Image 1 (cartoon, protein in one colour):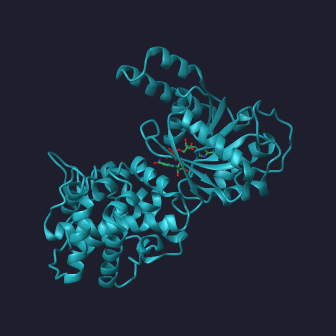
Image 2 (cartoon, protein in one colour; image 1 turned 45 degrees about the horizontal axis):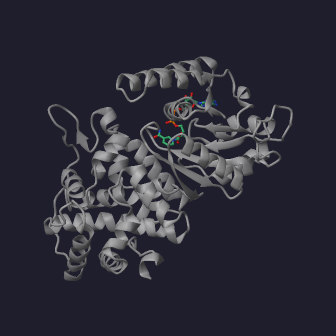
Image 3 (cartoon, rainbow, N blue to C red; image 1 turned 90 degrees about the vertical axis):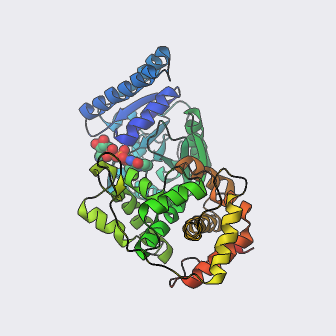
Length: 426
Ligand SMILES: NC(=O)c1ccc[n+]([C@@H]2O[C@H](COP(=O)([O-])OP(=O)(O)OC[C@H]3O[C@@H](n4cnc5c(N)ncnc54)[C@H](O)[C@@H]3O)[C@@H](O)[C@H]2O)c1
C-alpha cells in the first residue's frame, strides 16, 4: 500500500516514520523537493536513533528506510491509496494542496491531520475547487472511485510526537464515506495506533475534553485559591495525573494551548466554561511561552523550575453544602486507585473542581454523540496520558455525586459554567 504525506514538518515526518515502519510505502512532499528530501533525511536519522536505543533492528530500519522517499510535487502522489495532509493549520493551504490531487486521482482517500478545522468544511471547499479530470492513474485497490472529494475526505488526527503517542482520532465529516473511514482506521491500526471515532465537532474529543483541566486550574490561580505548584501537586497527588495542568501547558507551549482554547471557544459560540483566561493571554503577549522560552508558568532556570506566575492568596469560606459535596466526590474518586484520596480541605476543593469540569465536558460530548463513552475514555487516556477515562471515573464516583458537586459549584459560580450534562442527571 502507498501513502502520500503532504507537509513534512513535525507531524508529517512522524506520520511518514510510523507508516514506513508499519510496512507501507511512503511518498513525502513539501513546498519543494529539497525540503522533502531533507525531511526524509531526518526520518532516517530518527530510525537510526531507534536502532541505537535497541528499539529497532538494523534490518527493520533498512526496510523502513527503503520504503520512504521524497517527491518533487504533490502530483507525484497520484498512485497512493491514501494521502494525508499535514501542512500548516490554514483552510486555504489545506484545500490548496488537496484540490489538484482530489481532481486528478479520483479514487485516492484523502485525510487531514487538522487539529481545529472542520472536516466537513474542508471537504465541501474541496468539492468546489476540484473538478475531476479522471486523467491520472487510479490506485489498484480503490474502493472509492467516483465519490466526490468530500466523501473521500476523513479527519486523521495524530498526536505529537507521532512515533510515541498511540492515539489517532478518526473524524467523520458530514459527507465522509464509510469506506474512507474504514481505510483510514485500518491504516492507523497497521501503523500500530489505537483509533477512536469522533464526529466533526470543535476540538474533536481530546482537545475539547482536556480544556477543563487547564481552564479551571487557571481560574483558581486567578482567584487566588492556590499557586501553580500547589495546583500541579494536588492534581498529581490526589488525581494520579502524570503532569499538573501548568507543567503541561509549559510543555505544550502556552501559545499553542491558548490558540486551541480560543479556537474551540469561538467555534462553540463562546460558552463561559470554555472561555480562555486572561493569564494565558498575558503570558503569550509577554513571550513567556513555557519550556521553549525558558519561562512560562514556571521559570526553568537552574537548579530547578520555580513558579513564575504568582497569585494573591485569599482565604475562602466554602458553603457547607459545597464542602460536603467536595468531600464525598474526592472520597469516591480516590477509591481503588494508588492516589491518596486524602488531602487538605483546599486540596480537595482544587482537585474536585478540576475533575468535575473535565467529567462534565466529557459527558457533554457524550450527550452530543461526539463519540461513544468507550472512545471518549480511551482517547483521554491515550491522547493525554490521564490515569483514568473521565467517564469511567464518573461511573466510579457515581453520577449522583458528580451531579451534586456540579450543582454546588454552579451555585458558587456566577456564569453557569458547571451546568450539568444530561448524561449525569439521569
Ligand atoms: N504539532 C502538533 O502538536 C500537532 C498535533 C496534531 C495536529 N497538528 C496539525 O498538523 C498540521 C501540521 O502541523 P506541524 O506541527 O507538523 O507543522 P509544521 O510547521 O512543523 O509543518 C508544516 C509543514 O507544511 C509545509 N507546508 C506549508 N505549506 C505547504 C504547501 N503549500 N505545500 C506543501 N507543504 C507545505 C511546511 O513547509 C512544513 O514543513 C497542522 O494542521 C496542525 O494543526 C499538529
